[in-house]
Length: 225
Ligand code: SAH
Image 1 (cartoon, rainbow, N blue to C red):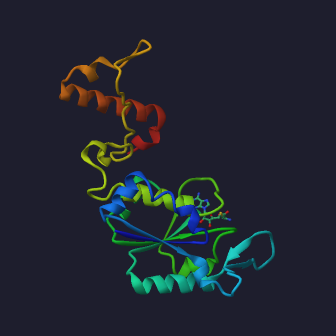
Image 2 (cartoon, rainbow, N blue to C red):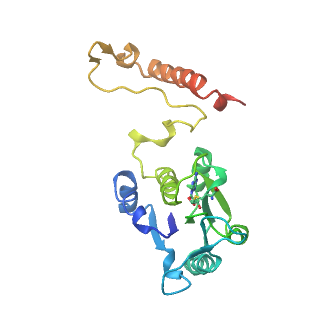
Image 3 (tube, rainbow, N blue to C red):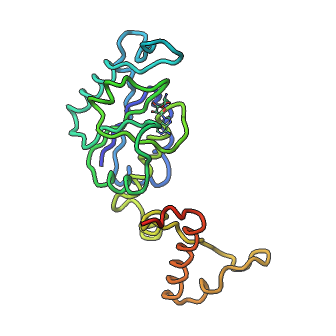
């Protein structure tokens, strides 16, 4: 899979893909992430990509021209399955969307800044708008990194069996069960006996039950329907 990201702050995206699981995904050539600086398509030599908003009011708006030119340029190189704008008023991101996007081949992610981007770009170039939660961040870079991480770890071959994504929270609309590691007794706090029983069927049943109890207590909304 190839993901292109368009941003005015490429430095913010240097670290998230350089470590751990996403690094491995890149090394194994399962995931390619290309970060593009929107200022390469600036309207003048000052690197301008934003302007005052019509109607007045505080805050700059990202201009149509650099965005349209950048999207068109990148679209000549790749046939994008989705052109995604990260925005707090987009569709709330969840595991289902991550699963669905992980099946795509080419994605373009647009990171907003300031007040956001000119509405005409949203209406005519963007195919999908995603929010990572009901709060406002100062830019779309961290949201884009969240998206790429959630998608990247689902690509076949990225995670090994031990960390298989299938057993994570939300994959079956349930939260994950509690987990423990050595020692079995830590300051008199003991690991549940059943996990030490060596009986995989019992362990499995216990985990299912714990998943269900945890979901019921913390996220009953996931059990609706
Ligand atoms: N004025 C806009 C917020 C702009 S925040 C509004 O009220 O809706 C600046 C940029 O940060 C946005 O363009 C978007 O790309 C990014 N951003 C902020 N919060 C986000 C969130 N919860 N999810 C996804 N992107 C977000």
